[in-house]
Amino acid sequence: MKLYADTPVRRSRQVFGDLWVVAWSAFSVWLATKVYDVTMALAVPGRKIEGAATTMGQRFRDAGTSADHVPVVGDKLAKPFSGAGGAADALADAGRSQAEAVHTFAWWLAIAVAIVPIVMVLTMYIPLRLRFVRRASTHVRLRDTEAGIDLLALRAITGQPLKVLSAISDDPAGDWRIGNAAVIRSLAAVELRDCGLKPSAVIAPRTPGPAPG
Image 1 (spheres, rainbow, N blue to C red):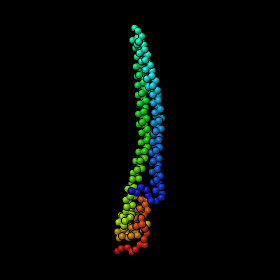
Image 2: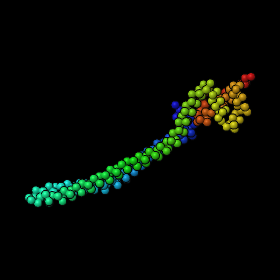
Image 3: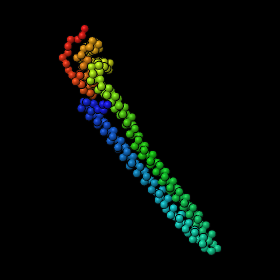
Image 4: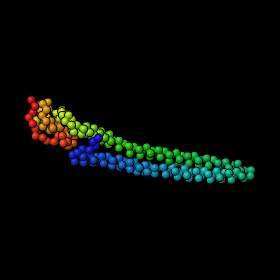
């Protein structure tokens, strides 16, 4: 598997791109944690209400229990305290629900802040990198054999601009058909360079011999 190009400029650009994606992903995760912390600060009032109301409710119930022991009028004295304790418990439940809602919202907001930017970048960058890896890996296998060089030359004929082909030969397709080794090697070299690869020793320049036929 060929991950990076042979040519320095293109290889540097690919390495920089990979590092940028990693840095962007790390920044997105860091930003998500900060957003989570800031959002969770909204849950503090709810937690305080829950704690204060719970303490208040417990004290009202304790007071009601003490009042209940008063002879004759104990039940009447304890009833208001019991009602106040129930109201305090309801207030505590409301504070707890608010804090839990903020926690859920903070969690999903942090996920969105982290995932959305990362997915947007990866959906644009990963296909380009995979396309290069597939093409470069195939070209690396082809450049080390004579048959592979012929295929690379044919690929150049079908895919390279006419301006590039005409600089190599007036009739690149004809030279390929008759097996002109010099032209075939030049075409293969162009195709490899277009992919950011260097020609192998098999495509090293040779003194061209007479064309067959």
